[in-house]
Image 1 (cartoon, helix red, strand yellow):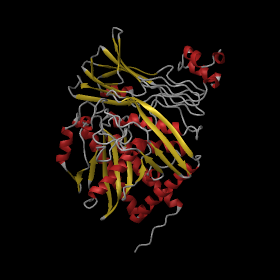
Image 2 (cartoon, helix red, strand yellow):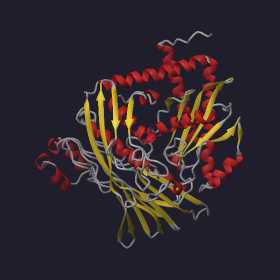
Image 3 (cartoon, rainbow, N blue to C red):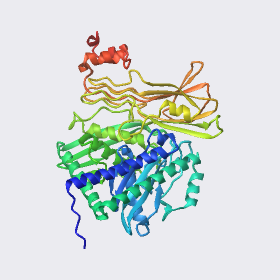
Length: 562
């Protein structure tokens, strides 16, 4: 029997950074070889490495926190269903939230096992948000859909490659049910290339260090992460902390969907109890437990130890209690396409719950909306169909020592705002305005971040618009006396000056080049009493035109800027 491998701290650090570099290289490979702007420009994808037990070991530096539990969920199910038949060269694909550990249908997972001879060592995985996976609405991201079947093609766990050979019938079946099949194939091929590269790089590590070294390294990483997280938890005062917030609506008539949370903290243990949360809703804002877990783990890591690695050690440090059939632990066939909006609200609720215990670390409510916009039609330049999908950033909540950031993606999304040049190069669209929204940051000792206004005109064709917004009714709250940020909105602007307001969940709006679609994302909440804001900060806000003099007069001490 082989002697157990003992790793010294220096070896652990070197090997750990090797694993991280593999995940990062896979991320960049996927980004640079993808076809869609959502990947190559906005970076709406993640890569990760798991061990032979299905434990997530490392996630790429620029990966999305919302994908954290989905990748580990997929691998756990692969082991349950295929452990006796796994072989080198296999690649698995899935997207379904209810049966395949997925997040929502546009997020397609891939995983490839890593072998040393006949010995399974782990998996390389990735997840990509595809711009369309079929379904009732273009972009597969419309609100108002009342069941998973309408949201796109449901993919259970399938073996896309068997011992290195592509199962072409599976690929053809998937592409037939998706809009823009050429673009989908390009992004899928990028995913395939990324997992193959990851397996190759891990093989090089095994050749250098040995398989037993890799197994021991994974154990050490998870154990040390868990210990580090529990140590951070132990620094929080013991107690029960409560908070609740509401979603605007579910797009099908249910208003004020409640997310209630009690955090029970004792010693180095913490439980997040969502008792009192609304039942799952007809609209597609529901969350699976995996998605809720990702949001909770992100929020706790951000509060307690932002540098701790994203892996199984964090999952093992917390407990989550959520009633099956509730909004945060939905059952089939609940729709989940817009779950990112709900994830953001879960993060706000976690931050609100910890405000009493960690007042110097929490922030005001962020734009929390992941305001999504889908433009689709036929490009008159080429005669080919297109789908432009984007989730736009907004304000970040103010902090204990700083203003919130303006016009950014926040919390569980780590994507970029699509550059104007990329939009106009790729699509028959003109961006007529791209700006921060004046007066949208909530007042406070530190100001909340500002929302974004993006105005888009179709050029030479009939264009379909779908939009989904949150924090359009319930503004992002401030904290410790800070005031709420501005709400978001959608509206149409006609060339004759007419303005038409749109609902916050809208689909099937058709516009021509005589109409501009205007998207305004929410701002964010302020931190602390506005009367305590420094006079020089207010002067800067007025000079930079972030705030108007009228807004300052209503919300701040006017004498300070006289």
